[in-house]
Length: 635
Figure (cartoon, rainbow, N blue to C red):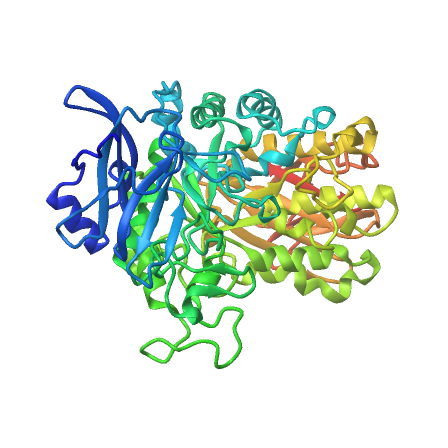
């Protein structure tokens, strides 16, 4: 039997930081690390299992036999078991066999820090290292500017497995194939960023990646870890940022995962009122435990550091923040002040964001937070949670509700389309039309639109134009840009065959034009979270279902006027108030023939006259195409 040699990568300082919940690079210490000890190459293993009586590494190198390679427990009450096993190296499969002090319970667990996992449904960890040579230094030098809060942010949300499946071979595209096809597509469409639904290893396909077991391993469904780095690298080389969905809210009960890890509630909260998510049948992290906080923050740092991610979109923040989330009376316990907020989560999120921005000031964290919890995207030093942005769920809900209505009834629901501006500047909002809106019987975005085919596409162009001119950054789930008819199916592929048909070709052309116009129009992105960047012209013309406003950037000469005609009625000689004299000139029109519209436009510059209107000193008469957004600049 090959002996386990005593060895440690931990210093006393590491241990003190870990116990205090302040070690944020645990991936450098825990897990499996290929090293040379006394001239022999092998692998050092380290795992946290404080309730264990015995921990063995089992794997393909010892016929999965427990007791062959027993790790040594540290003497410092840290609960860490570690040791060096000679001749075990890259590609070897392994798990930890843990005999617990609790009733002799035995568990066989994947390594929480594994850098690579077996392809599901297999569940072993794999000893791995790569020496990937990054070629994205150009992007990394300038990404502070590209990821800034006053930069254009148009995000393409992607589920890698179903973006474009190799249908004839019934398989996923690989990271390498995606680095070619996805990157070229996103670049051609002029998106600024891609957001990937979770790519950390997960066992169950229908969870879409939101039930994670391998927090430090890119899923093996599409290839090796270094191949995922290649995909990130290719995005960066093409000036596209990458945001990763990150799930610190819950994890599955799978036998090989984090649950009941050492025969005790190690990672999950022991009180089911705080430790079990009834909706998702999953376990909730114990944010009160220092070592768990270190694990999670180290994981966030890992993806930013090792994989050059430009941001993390943090999933299900509301479920973390509230003790009564999806619980009835009696199923939750108030905090020490009698409130519903989970105080440990509040402090955890503040610490997470403080550490992320201290280490990576050129990235963004984005909260998927669906309630009115205050100051989610405000700095921690003034009492905020410290996120860079927050999803504007209220805008998404109200807007889709409004656009579903037949235009003849929209005048009775005018406030649904204007209400978002009452709170648009309370947070740094991202406007999401995400995957959640095209599943579970909600229909696709195009499928929600009323009217005949022409009106459905015109409504959709109007919706997207309204989104791009509304304050905030933008996010669209894949398929929305080509007018997907069907709901999203994670097992299939987007219906790319729709691009054989002219209306879908025109919509794709339109979304590309919107992205391009947005990136080239500073007034639409320089002040996305600031009331100074927006001025209403008219929000009360419910009778005509028309809204108009001015978007402003750093230079007033670049301000633009936006008018949305939310009905199919052509409106000629429609007067709008304006703050200055001169002329206005149409620079964007969703009703262009090229986009599938009727071709109505304001072909010549329009003189602004000294006739007060809409509370402004000047005004002009314009033509409003049916179901359109039109944009003017000032001359």
